[in-house]
Image (cartoon, rainbow, N blue to C red):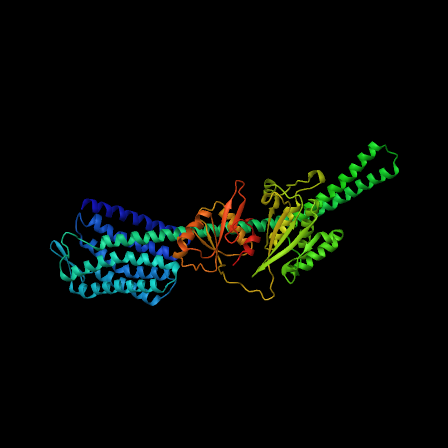
Length: 575
């Protein structure tokens, strides 16, 4: 028994500490009111048990017995209150009635009507037995029934929490009922054990504290994620504001630079035409003029970069019209080199015409500067997204160059006057339209081919746009063993595809996800386990990664063909 008592003491101290933590956290952070009420309930249980564990064994006191019973009188009210808060329900009448009963019984218990001293022992009166004992029994039954009904009817998210409450209430209810039966019979059910309620209450407190600690951790994580998103949004707002201010300042600076550059290049041209200069000095003067023009162009790119995310004329526009207009106005001599597929016809996005035209002018200009002789533009559409695929046969780029393609001031054309802002501006404009851009080099995928592939996604515009439900797409992603999970998830998000994500193949059964008609993505090892468990169901896509961390995928229907895992692949292989 000493060991048992020691365990009870440790548990009681732990519950007291946790109760105070819940109360303080809720008073300071305002997570959920149920934490506060649970904290008080658990504190009452702990104090009730502490009297039995530390005070009564030393010297039985009538006043302490009355305090214990008065605390017990408020158990039903507090338990019911936080249970209702947990279920997001309100029944103030029952709650007020239970608290009223608690106050009435507490008042009676401190009089001599309920418990009296009879020599060396304390005796419960007839009033105690015909009022307090039946009330506590009925309260136990009522709250247990409420828990059982809630577990059966509530949503899955709360079922686990309620199940643990029900599990914890079993020892508490059983201990209380056994002690109440002992009171009715006038002697202990098991003479060696003073109280069954104390260990029962401590077990209940432990189980429910575990649940509330888990809930607290989830709430803290969610708040951290929300806070991170708010910080990101705030930074974006600050960035847009700073970009707007930078744009205004840069516009003034750009105007002055243009004036000075115009004067410099004008004088350089005048010197070349009218001054009797040697060939050596003519080259120097030409360099001065060219440098002035480059300085003017650079200041213009800085201005474009500062204004990239500021949309001035956002309206519905046809992607096909935009691209064709861009080609005719800016590349009249290269029309035959640019193939625009009919799949773009009838697709509308919501955007700023001038900004998006700037995007495609830069993309096509970059391709021709990379020695491309053919540029293909096609699209894949589904539900709410259009994916534009711009593919050229230029010189392409290496894996290292690909990783820095969208970084500010990164350029491979410094000798040609490149500033390294072009692709950065393109990405900023696309993202300001709610879109995404990714680049893939054919040089990495196939030694016989070269060139660049740009995957650009935009949300489609509909006249009567409604909020779409968060439905799952026919894809199951098994993330066990995937080294680059964040990148893979982002590729799905870029084209608004929402897969079922599971840890391992066994979780598909546990979550009752239907497999028929689904595409299954995972590592070779994971999908072998899937085949052993489910057979030849679904279409399998084996994801792998090389030493350069390029992600590839093999379709089970095309066993020998290896593809770069991209937005294009995802949309083309939706079942």
